[in-house]
Length: 217
View 1 (cartoon, rainbow, N blue to C red):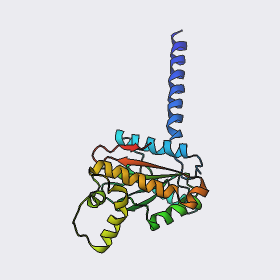
View 2 (view 1 turned 180 degrees about the vertical axis):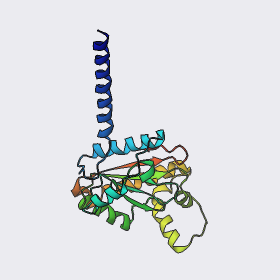
View 3 (view 1 turned 120 degrees about the vertical axis):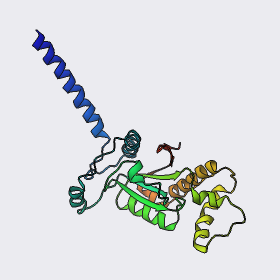
View 4 (view 1 turned 45 degrees about the vertical axis):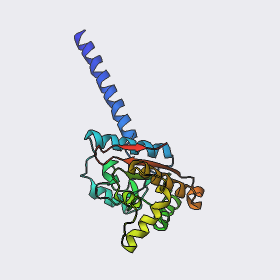
């Protein structure tokens, strides 16, 4: 009788463990997997940030195998346009590995012609179903666009000029940062290649202190 009950308990433990493993696997992107549903992409990103916050990041010891597989081609499940700030690395805060996300970075996460061209390639040729513009707290580029009477070098001023249209009606950095993200999202959503691809576009903000990514409605 005791052995029977023990066997039953062990069977339940194995069943729930297997279910939990299967649930975890659902949010783990295989670099050979072609994702076509933007909701699946979003789940991968959310789960990755959850792992990052919980200190449960994926192991990084399989790069040799990954490089061999990726030598045949890439199937990123999402495109991330984010800032070049050294504290803002999407492969880390989304806990993704080689071949998972197509990353574009520049100061202020601006959707300029270079960024848009890269996005067109990612959604038009690689068929990534989701584009996310990720801004971040304490963004120096956005803060610079809020300053009056400050002289920047010509190249840096060209960056500031692209941020100005989104933030010139804001005084607080947090509000301006959100406005800059939404401006980038709108520009990408209006891109003909993005429209034709059917890719979804959304914004998010990364908190450089807490590590949390908040997706914008």
